[in-house]
Image (cartoon, rainbow, N blue to C red; front, top):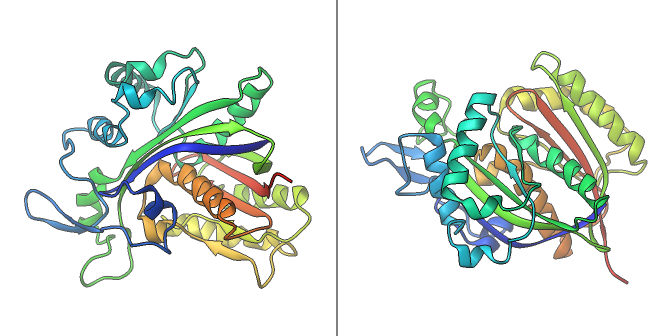
Length: 314
Protein backbone atom coordinates (compact mmCIF):
# COMPACT_ATOMS: atom_id res chain seq x y z
CA UNK A 1 0.00 0.00 0.00
CA UNK A 2 1.33 3.42 -0.99
CA UNK A 3 0.14 6.40 1.02
CA UNK A 4 0.64 10.13 1.31
CA UNK A 5 -0.31 12.57 4.05
CA UNK A 6 -1.49 16.17 3.90
CA UNK A 7 -3.33 18.85 5.89
CA UNK A 8 -1.32 18.00 9.00
CA UNK A 9 -1.69 19.98 12.21
CA UNK A 10 0.51 19.29 15.20
CA UNK A 11 1.28 20.59 18.66
CA UNK A 12 4.09 19.38 20.92
CA UNK A 13 4.23 21.17 24.23
CA UNK A 14 3.98 24.90 23.55
CA UNK A 15 4.91 24.63 19.85
CA UNK A 16 2.49 24.25 16.95
CA UNK A 17 4.94 25.15 14.17
CA UNK A 18 4.64 22.22 11.75
CA UNK A 19 7.94 22.92 9.98
CA UNK A 20 9.86 23.24 13.25
CA UNK A 21 8.43 20.06 14.74
CA UNK A 22 8.75 17.80 11.71
CA UNK A 23 12.29 18.98 10.93
CA UNK A 24 13.72 18.26 14.38
CA UNK A 25 16.60 18.08 15.25
CA UNK A 26 17.62 20.33 12.34
CA UNK A 27 15.23 23.12 13.34
CA UNK A 28 14.96 25.26 16.46
CA UNK A 29 14.71 23.03 19.56
CA UNK A 30 11.45 22.74 21.44
CA UNK A 31 10.97 24.60 24.72
CA UNK A 32 11.54 22.24 27.65
CA UNK A 33 11.42 24.99 30.25
CA UNK A 34 8.06 24.33 31.93
CA UNK A 35 7.01 26.00 35.15
CA UNK A 36 3.88 25.00 37.06
CA UNK A 37 1.53 27.63 38.49
CA UNK A 38 2.91 26.61 41.88
CA UNK A 39 6.36 27.65 40.66
CA UNK A 40 7.81 24.15 40.34
CA UNK A 41 10.18 23.92 37.39
CA UNK A 42 10.39 20.85 35.14
CA UNK A 43 12.44 19.93 32.08
CA UNK A 44 9.33 19.10 30.08
CA UNK A 45 7.50 20.20 26.93
CA UNK A 46 4.04 21.16 28.14
CA UNK A 47 1.41 23.53 26.80
CA UNK A 48 0.11 26.29 29.02
CA UNK A 49 -3.37 27.00 30.35
CA UNK A 50 -4.68 23.45 29.99
CA UNK A 51 -6.87 21.53 32.44
CA UNK A 52 -5.12 19.91 35.39
CA UNK A 53 -8.11 18.00 36.82
CA UNK A 54 -8.08 14.98 34.48
CA UNK A 55 -6.08 13.63 31.56
CA UNK A 56 -9.00 13.56 29.12
CA UNK A 57 -9.89 17.19 29.87
CA UNK A 58 -6.27 18.19 29.34
CA UNK A 59 -6.23 16.32 26.02
CA UNK A 60 -9.42 18.08 24.93
CA UNK A 61 -7.48 21.32 25.40
CA UNK A 62 -4.63 19.97 23.26
CA UNK A 63 -7.10 19.05 20.52
CA UNK A 64 -8.45 22.60 20.63
CA UNK A 65 -4.89 23.82 20.03
CA UNK A 66 -4.94 22.00 16.67
CA UNK A 67 -8.38 23.63 16.14
CA UNK A 68 -10.38 20.42 16.25
CA UNK A 69 -13.23 22.44 17.73
CA UNK A 70 -13.31 24.78 14.71
CA UNK A 71 -15.95 23.42 12.33
CA UNK A 72 -14.71 25.71 9.55
CA UNK A 73 -11.23 24.17 9.83
CA UNK A 74 -12.86 20.73 9.98
CA UNK A 75 -14.29 21.14 6.46
CA UNK A 76 -11.07 19.79 4.91
CA UNK A 77 -11.39 16.63 7.04
CA UNK A 78 -15.15 16.03 6.81
CA UNK A 79 -16.81 13.03 5.13
CA UNK A 80 -13.84 10.81 6.02
CA UNK A 81 -13.56 8.06 8.65
CA UNK A 82 -11.58 9.16 11.69
CA UNK A 83 -9.03 6.78 13.21
CA UNK A 84 -8.20 7.78 16.79
CA UNK A 85 -4.81 6.72 18.21
CA UNK A 86 -5.04 6.70 22.00
CA UNK A 87 -2.99 5.75 25.06
CA UNK A 88 -3.42 2.26 26.52
CA UNK A 89 -6.91 2.29 28.04
CA UNK A 90 -9.08 -0.36 29.65
CA UNK A 91 -12.70 -0.79 28.56
CA UNK A 92 -14.13 1.55 31.21
CA UNK A 93 -11.64 4.33 30.49
CA UNK A 94 -12.16 3.98 26.75
CA UNK A 95 -15.93 4.30 27.14
CA UNK A 96 -15.50 7.44 29.25
CA UNK A 97 -13.05 9.02 26.81
CA UNK A 98 -15.18 8.25 23.75
CA UNK A 99 -18.22 9.79 25.45
CA UNK A 100 -16.35 13.02 26.23
CA UNK A 101 -14.82 13.25 22.74
CA UNK A 102 -18.30 12.74 21.22
CA UNK A 103 -19.67 15.55 23.38
CA UNK A 104 -16.86 18.02 22.65
CA UNK A 105 -16.24 17.23 18.95
CA UNK A 106 -19.50 15.79 17.53
CA UNK A 107 -18.56 16.76 13.96
CA UNK A 108 -15.68 14.26 14.13
CA UNK A 109 -18.07 11.32 14.43
CA UNK A 110 -20.40 11.66 11.45
CA UNK A 111 -18.76 8.86 9.44
CA UNK A 112 -19.91 5.32 10.23
CA UNK A 113 -16.39 3.87 10.12
CA UNK A 114 -14.75 5.99 12.83
CA UNK A 115 -12.61 3.74 15.02
CA UNK A 116 -10.53 3.89 18.20
CA UNK A 117 -7.15 2.25 18.72
CA UNK A 118 -6.15 2.40 22.44
CA UNK A 119 -2.80 0.68 21.87
CA UNK A 120 -0.28 3.36 22.84
CA UNK A 121 2.46 4.23 20.35
CA UNK A 122 1.72 0.99 18.44
CA UNK A 123 -1.80 2.30 17.68
CA UNK A 124 -0.57 3.65 14.35
CA UNK A 125 0.12 0.18 12.98
CA UNK A 126 -3.29 -1.15 14.02
CA UNK A 127 -4.84 1.88 12.30
CA UNK A 128 -2.77 1.39 9.15
CA UNK A 129 -3.90 -2.23 9.07
CA UNK A 130 -7.53 -1.07 9.30
CA UNK A 131 -6.93 1.58 6.63
CA UNK A 132 -5.55 -1.07 4.29
CA UNK A 133 -8.76 -3.06 4.73
CA UNK A 134 -10.74 0.09 3.88
CA UNK A 135 -9.04 0.22 0.49
CA UNK A 136 -10.83 -3.00 -0.40
CA UNK A 137 -14.05 -1.02 0.10
CA UNK A 138 -12.71 1.84 -2.05
CA UNK A 139 -12.19 4.20 0.87
CA UNK A 140 -9.20 6.15 -0.44
CA UNK A 141 -8.57 8.46 2.54
CA UNK A 142 -9.04 8.76 6.29
CA UNK A 143 -8.29 11.19 9.09
CA UNK A 144 -5.85 10.10 11.79
CA UNK A 145 -5.86 11.83 15.17
CA UNK A 146 -3.32 11.00 17.88
CA UNK A 147 -3.10 12.51 21.37
CA UNK A 148 -1.35 11.94 24.68
CA UNK A 149 0.07 13.82 27.66
CA UNK A 150 2.64 12.89 30.27
CA UNK A 151 1.65 15.88 32.42
CA UNK A 152 0.18 13.73 35.18
CA UNK A 153 3.41 11.74 35.55
CA UNK A 154 5.56 14.77 36.38
CA UNK A 155 5.35 14.61 40.17
CA UNK A 156 5.85 10.84 40.31
CA UNK A 157 8.83 10.93 37.95
CA UNK A 158 10.40 13.74 39.96
CA UNK A 159 9.93 11.96 43.27
CA UNK A 160 11.56 8.82 41.83
CA UNK A 161 14.46 10.90 40.46
CA UNK A 162 13.63 9.79 36.90
CA UNK A 163 13.55 13.24 35.30
CA UNK A 164 16.25 15.21 33.55
CA UNK A 165 16.90 18.25 35.73
CA UNK A 166 19.48 20.93 36.45
CA UNK A 167 21.84 18.44 38.06
CA UNK A 168 20.96 15.24 36.18
CA UNK A 169 21.43 14.79 32.43
CA UNK A 170 20.03 11.25 32.28
CA UNK A 171 16.30 10.68 32.60
CA UNK A 172 12.96 11.33 30.98
CA UNK A 173 11.73 14.57 29.43
CA UNK A 174 7.93 14.28 29.59
CA UNK A 175 5.90 16.01 26.90
CA UNK A 176 2.42 16.17 25.46
CA UNK A 177 1.26 16.24 21.86
CA UNK A 178 -1.66 16.06 19.48
CA UNK A 179 -1.62 15.46 15.72
CA UNK A 180 -4.25 15.40 13.01
CA UNK A 181 -3.48 14.42 9.44
CA UNK A 182 -5.16 13.01 6.35
CA UNK A 183 -3.78 9.74 5.04
CA UNK A 184 -4.58 8.89 1.45
CA UNK A 185 -3.95 5.87 -0.77
CA UNK A 186 -1.97 7.09 -3.78
CA UNK A 187 0.31 5.87 -6.55
CA UNK A 188 3.38 7.69 -5.18
CA UNK A 189 4.66 8.44 -1.69
CA UNK A 190 5.40 6.18 1.26
CA UNK A 191 5.24 2.53 0.30
CA UNK A 192 4.30 0.35 3.28
CA UNK A 193 6.19 -2.76 2.24
CA UNK A 194 5.60 -4.65 5.48
CA UNK A 195 3.33 -4.27 8.50
CA UNK A 196 3.47 -6.58 11.52
CA UNK A 197 1.39 -6.49 14.71
CA UNK A 198 2.07 -8.25 18.01
CA UNK A 199 0.77 -8.45 21.57
CA UNK A 200 3.16 -9.43 24.32
CA UNK A 201 3.70 -9.32 28.06
CA UNK A 202 6.70 -7.37 29.31
CA UNK A 203 8.44 -10.65 30.22
CA UNK A 204 8.19 -11.85 26.61
CA UNK A 205 8.95 -8.49 25.00
CA UNK A 206 12.51 -9.28 23.86
CA UNK A 207 11.35 -12.51 22.22
CA UNK A 208 8.46 -10.71 20.55
CA UNK A 209 10.76 -7.99 19.17
CA UNK A 210 13.10 -10.72 17.94
CA UNK A 211 10.16 -12.19 16.05
CA UNK A 212 9.27 -8.80 14.57
CA UNK A 213 12.89 -8.22 13.47
CA UNK A 214 12.98 -11.71 11.94
CA UNK A 215 9.79 -11.03 9.96
CA UNK A 216 11.31 -7.76 8.78
CA UNK A 217 14.41 -9.54 7.43
CA UNK A 218 12.23 -12.05 5.60
CA UNK A 219 10.29 -9.24 3.93
CA UNK A 220 13.25 -7.02 3.08
CA UNK A 221 16.37 -8.80 1.84
CA UNK A 222 18.42 -5.58 1.58
CA UNK A 223 20.00 -3.43 4.28
CA UNK A 224 17.83 -1.02 6.25
CA UNK A 225 19.03 2.51 5.61
CA UNK A 226 17.34 3.96 8.69
CA UNK A 227 15.72 2.48 11.76
CA UNK A 228 13.31 4.40 13.97
CA UNK A 229 13.53 2.72 17.39
CA UNK A 230 12.00 3.56 20.80
CA UNK A 231 14.01 5.45 23.41
CA UNK A 232 11.44 6.50 26.02
CA UNK A 233 12.19 3.72 28.51
CA UNK A 234 15.44 1.92 29.37
CA UNK A 235 13.69 -1.45 29.71
CA UNK A 236 12.30 -1.16 26.19
CA UNK A 237 15.69 -0.01 24.87
CA UNK A 238 17.36 -3.03 26.50
CA UNK A 239 14.74 -5.33 25.02
CA UNK A 240 15.23 -4.20 21.42
CA UNK A 241 19.00 -4.11 21.92
CA UNK A 242 18.84 -7.74 23.03
CA UNK A 243 16.84 -8.53 19.88
CA UNK A 244 19.04 -6.46 17.55
CA UNK A 245 21.14 -9.43 16.46
CA UNK A 246 18.14 -10.67 14.46
CA UNK A 247 18.86 -7.82 12.02
CA UNK A 248 22.37 -9.13 11.34
CA UNK A 249 23.10 -9.02 7.62
CA UNK A 250 20.44 -6.34 7.11
CA UNK A 251 22.28 -3.42 8.68
CA UNK A 252 25.64 -1.95 7.71
CA UNK A 253 27.90 0.98 8.57
CA UNK A 254 25.55 3.36 6.74
CA UNK A 255 22.41 2.27 8.61
CA UNK A 256 21.20 5.09 10.86
CA UNK A 257 19.31 4.67 14.13
CA UNK A 258 16.83 7.45 14.88
CA UNK A 259 15.37 7.96 18.36
CA UNK A 260 13.04 10.92 18.09
CA UNK A 261 12.13 11.00 21.79
CA UNK A 262 15.54 12.57 22.35
CA UNK A 263 14.35 15.81 20.73
CA UNK A 264 10.54 15.69 21.12
CA UNK A 265 10.51 14.45 24.69
CA UNK A 266 8.34 11.48 25.63
CA UNK A 267 5.06 12.05 23.75
CA UNK A 268 3.56 8.68 24.64
CA UNK A 269 1.10 7.21 22.16
CA UNK A 270 1.69 10.06 19.69
CA UNK A 271 5.22 8.79 18.99
CA UNK A 272 4.04 6.27 16.40
CA UNK A 273 2.30 8.82 14.18
CA UNK A 274 5.01 11.41 14.80
CA UNK A 275 7.73 9.02 13.64
CA UNK A 276 5.67 8.12 10.56
CA UNK A 277 5.22 11.79 9.62
CA UNK A 278 8.87 12.59 10.41
CA UNK A 279 9.93 9.82 8.01
CA UNK A 280 7.42 10.91 5.36
CA UNK A 281 8.67 14.49 5.59
CA UNK A 282 12.31 13.44 5.22
CA UNK A 283 11.54 11.23 2.22
CA UNK A 284 9.50 14.02 0.63
CA UNK A 285 12.35 16.51 1.07
CA UNK A 286 14.83 13.96 -0.34
CA UNK A 287 16.77 14.02 2.94
CA UNK A 288 16.85 10.24 2.92
CA UNK A 289 16.30 7.30 0.60
CA UNK A 290 16.25 3.53 0.67
CA UNK A 291 14.45 1.26 3.12
CA UNK A 292 13.23 2.32 6.57
CA UNK A 293 12.15 0.29 9.59
CA UNK A 294 9.90 1.67 12.34
CA UNK A 295 9.41 -0.22 15.62
CA UNK A 296 6.87 0.94 18.18
CA UNK A 297 6.46 -0.60 21.63
CA UNK A 298 3.62 0.61 23.84
CA UNK A 299 4.10 0.66 27.58
CA UNK A 300 1.76 -2.31 27.91
CA UNK A 301 1.10 -5.25 25.64
CA UNK A 302 1.11 -3.87 22.09
CA UNK A 303 3.96 -3.78 19.58
CA UNK A 304 4.25 -3.21 15.86
CA UNK A 305 6.77 -2.86 13.08
CA UNK A 306 6.56 -1.34 9.61
CA UNK A 307 8.90 -1.32 6.62
CA UNK A 308 8.81 1.64 4.25
CA UNK A 309 10.30 2.80 1.00
CA UNK A 310 9.63 5.86 -1.15
CA UNK A 311 8.03 5.71 -4.56
CA UNK A 312 8.24 8.84 -6.71
CA UNK A 313 6.07 9.58 -9.70
CA UNK A 314 7.99 9.23 -12.97
